[in-house]
Image (cartoon, rainbow, N blue to C red; front, side):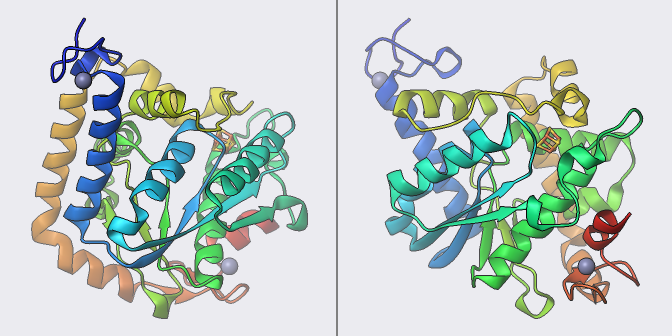
Length: 293
Ligand code: SF4
Ligand SMILES: [Zn+2]
Ligand SMILES: [Zn+2]
């Protein structure tokens, strides 16, 4: 098979691109994200797990940072998961060195609980892990003066979240599933950007392989219970166009409600009496509850 643009050997069959044109396509998609969200001249803290998505994100943001005025930093958490967390941490250090970026490391050994404490016969650690990661990422960004948090969420992740919300009739959450959320410094909330929004997992993996970007290929030992991974395996037959179409429909559904939702969401926030970070609950935030129970 030949590249549809230059007739060299194609290395990415779905779009018929050679290596050079695949890399150009990839960077263009991330540029399109910044153009469509108007995120410019901002400080971005990139949450890295050691996996292909966040590693690809570091490389591509580093490549386009001058064009969009981005000041970058890296953040990673040692979740204290045996045979997994250490490798993620090593990748984080390698990325910081390779791209000469500051790295913040948070270690759950300094907190009341570590992820394996949430695993048991009937317990599945992924939901608590999600709460902890979201909380610590936001805290690191706010405490260190970053405007936005960037995560490696890709088209497949966003499709899963939209489907999950539709199937479970989580209409409010569906309306809030945005590709960018603005910072709310008064509420101690960093903004959220997802620059890989238009790219698939496969494309992120290929980008890492072609560019020799450090990343860990091992799965977390708890991933067999991760609902998102199970969903993706079960619904692997959805095409990239189906996924893009569904997300476009979600954006259309959100438009008439956007301002109302943003206003309501801001009005619902209170300070957690234990840690001072925002929560929609009247008492402690979900992170403080998870760490205590
Ligand atoms: S698979 Fe679950 S426990 Fe493991 S890192 Fe992901 S969310 Fe956390
Ligand atoms: Zn080509
Ligand atoms: Zn709290």
